[in-house]
Image (cartoon, rainbow, N blue to C red; front, side):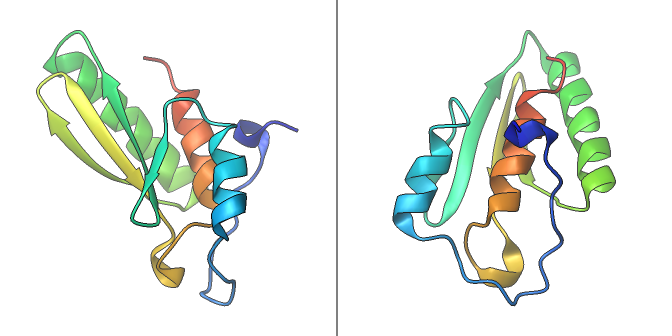
Length: 107
């Protein structure tokens, strides 16, 4: 099953952070994302501010639906997205699932 079709599991803080080799393995499944400081990041480019904001609204709706919330910053026609599991201070499988779901949103 593809990552985008899997379910994000709410973290209660009882799971360990992903090991570096697992992070590298999962990064291969989500194009354009990179790891930095135990977080994954991607920049999305849009035609203009309105298109970027439509994407942000879709991403916000998705985040609420799955109960996992990314950090993001809008720079006119660019949206920088950062994901990690706050309760464990690092990455979990759910972070990669959310990234895949974000990638599947209409651009």
